Length: 410
Ligand code: ATP
Image (cartoon, rainbow, N blue to C red; front, side, top):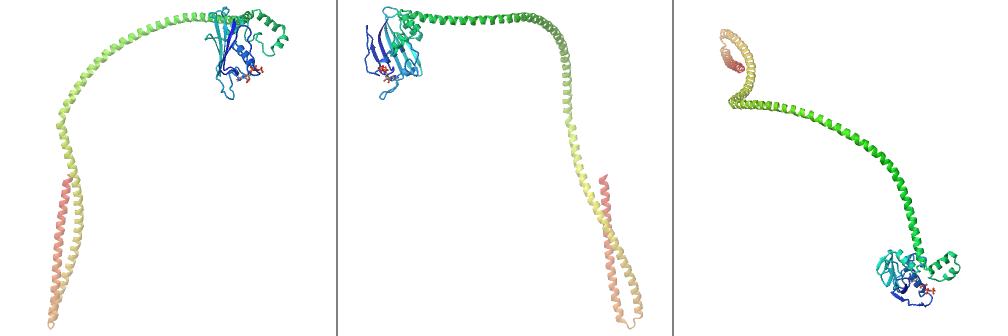
């Protein structure tokens, strides 16, 4: 396989897309210090699968992306592609179907690297294998950087052997042997793990065996339990059937009793309806009686009040009568006094008449006094007669009130 062309974009100092043709024979790159000659060699190693950022003279792999200059902003990605002539078809199977193979590697900030072979995405491992088979690669001693010659001269035999093996074209075989060794180690580790799992499974098998015996025992017990439950259910069913029969009989009895009760209820309802039909006249009478009773009660209360008033009037009349009797007695006493006075005056008049001779005038005065006394007596008698009449009237009223009260009470 021949390298035909190298294409760079955004890689280190190659900010713009740059293509470098690699013609048969010798191709030289000439330029002043710092123009980017070493960057080209690093680009070839990077596209062949370099994983060391230090080998790329950076702190991280993203340092290969153009970092910007005074007049140019930084780039977001870097891409290097190398075109290989595969006319001899020496590429590994799977990639060996084209005359020209373009291997490209692209890195973007925060997104890592990706490889493509003829536009198809491939693994970094596939790319490394492709170049190893072609007796080259990122770590190939054929790529000689500055200071590398003196390193090789002073190298240990093992390192020199690597150079000789690559020159003999067995580097790919070594790569494959290395991968086979890794796979064998992995298989051995897996085998050990399988043996551990088998041991675990043996232990688990013993447990499962024990559990299977327990399960068989459980099944037998469960079967016996099921039979016992069945027998119990049959017994309960029979019991329930007997109870249902008894309940049915009781229901029939109860239905009959209910029919009788209903008939009795109907009869009672009928009797009640009849009683209710007969009730109105009696109720009316009761209402009338109640009204009469109410009226009588009211009248009784009124009569009681009247009787009380009549008794009060009788008491007042009696007091008045007693007063009038006292007045009459006083008037009678006055009358007696007046009569005595009159008798005495008459006596005196007689004496005066006897002694009258010559005393005509005194006689006339005495007659006038006698006439006045007579008039006073007549007035007193008239007052007495009036008081007696009043007393008789009040006594009659009192008697009538007492009589009415007695009647009311009766
Ligand atoms: P010498 O002859 O002295 O070895 P050289 O021609 O090999 O020099 P390189 O070492 O390949 O030159 O290139 C170094 C140049 O690349 C420097 O100018 C440096 O600024 C530039 N460079 C390196 N990495 C980047 C980057 N990530 N972004 C921009 N420029 C970079």
